[in-house]
Amino acid sequence: RGTYPGRFRTLLFVGEGTRRGRTIVEGCALVLHDPVGRFCWLDYLASAKGLSGRGVGGAIYGDLRGYVKGLDCVGLFFE
Image 1: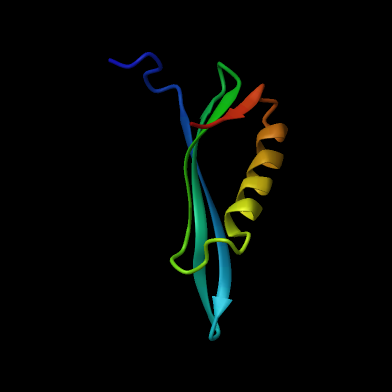
Image 2: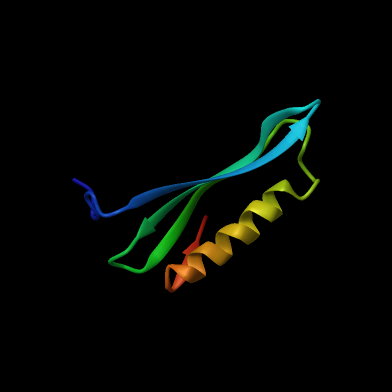
């Protein structure tokens, strides 16, 4: 049994773009939200192959920070 059984809400943030007229996923972030403890845990942040260093991860992280502020959390944590 975990310390927080069933308490986390899973959030998925996706950064999309278009290439050759098709929508593609350029990056994503997987976040766990604990509404009782009022915090979020960034578990995974990734960008598509060949897109590292182009700001995709930074853009997703920026949107994520704004969303977390709206949840009235004390912080967004990651390791």
